[in-house]
Image 1 (cartoon, one colour):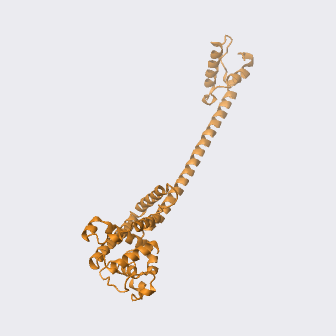
Image 2 (image 1 turned 180 degrees about the horizontal axis):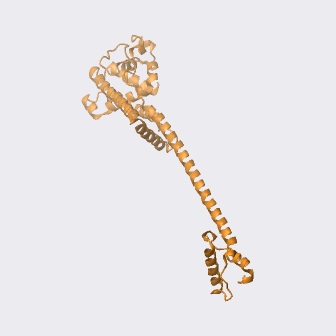
Image 3 (image 1 turned 90 degrees about the horizontal axis):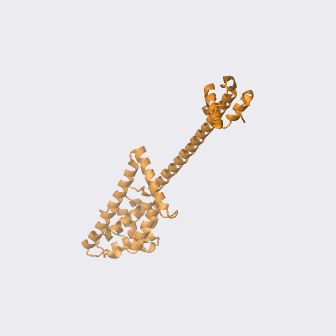
Length: 295
């Protein structure tokens, strides 16, 4: 549309249709952009051009205000969408880490071991139970386990009282695992001239490790289960340090170390007091194997 002072309002609106209206705030802005477009179309201002009166610019300024309002709405909508996405992300993250902490607590629960005797004298009833009443048991029902850290446990292995042991399976599996580690140690083998190597049992050790891994959630759930379990444990440990200064982890670690120390001491005492080739030692290791493998 050519410039026509007689049809200025219509020409102005047509020229400003593709302009960046949001940048127009007053009459001078509209006049400046209008003149730029006339020069762009004609190479110069038309010879019959009259300076644009501000009375003509109000419709354009109203369009500019409407455009700014739409832009502001789009920006606000985008901001709300980002905030909502962020809120959902935080909620999902919180749920994820809450689940990780809870799973980690469950897995660390596999290390919640007891201190003190795993088998008490009262649990055993009479130690004079005839061997004929104990399925698969090998030795005499009488043996002196005085001085052992876990004397009741040794007695239960010796007479085959697995009904008493089952309620403490988690603790006892850790205990037996340390016994197997001890008799497999080169120093122990040299000390007792290979006499106890007959009790080193790879299949038993494999069963023990499988059980311990299962207590940590490392034995199922696909190829990434160990990584997931490790992350869960790590999250739980971090939470424990943040919430309780790591007291839960330190308690579990102390209890594990304490039980492992007891197992090592009892293994050395068993070998030195009864000898690796005695019926008593043979019965105890047989009892350990049958307990682990549920024979």
